[in-house]
Amino acid sequence: MGSSKAIRVWDPLIRVFHWATVLLCVLNLFILEEGRRNHRYVGYALAGLLVLRILWGLVGSDYARFAQWFPTPARLGRYLQASWQGKHPYHAGHNPLGALMILMMLTCLVGTAVTGIMTGYEQLFDEDLMEELHEFFAKALQIAIFIHVLAVIVLDRLTRSDLIRAMITGRKRVPAGTEIVDKR
Image 1 (cartoon, rainbow, N blue to C red):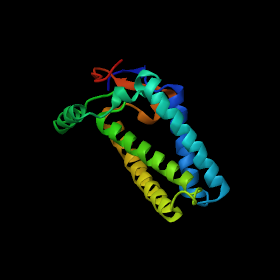
Image 2: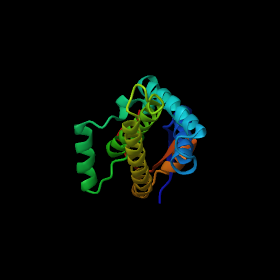
Image 3: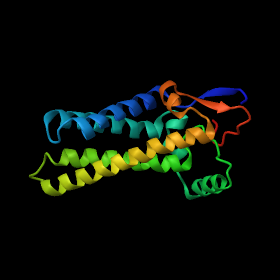
Image 4: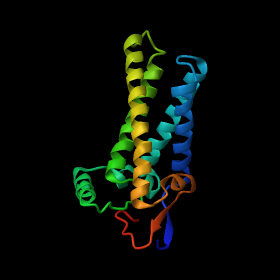
């Protein structure tokens, strides 16, 4: 195997958001009891992180910006066609399928946070409906997380890019001779 180089991709805010979200989701999905004070506080913290991430997606560093990786039909088509041909295009940021997953997880996180907050306002919203929607988004988030982790493992094998290490260090390994599709 040839040498590789590392490029800076994920800025500190993205990495802190990612791992804090992992920790807070583990707490609220698997450890803390629903509806209790700590569960709510963790949910509020997640909601705050989401607001920060959405703002950073509009004005942040190159690979953090939604416009850089938004999965347009053209990007998806090119990626799927090349992947189908066994080429596995290398993206420094999110590949188009990964971008779809990020959008799914962000949607589930926002849906879970908003409906969780709304359950505290039963005078304004139907509490049973909000709890059902809250549970729906939380279950969808669990499925999305499972698929995300599995996809990271598979993609890491195909591209040899050390994706997990990149989310810790901010630097992504690029194997020698690899063409980067979205280099900045």
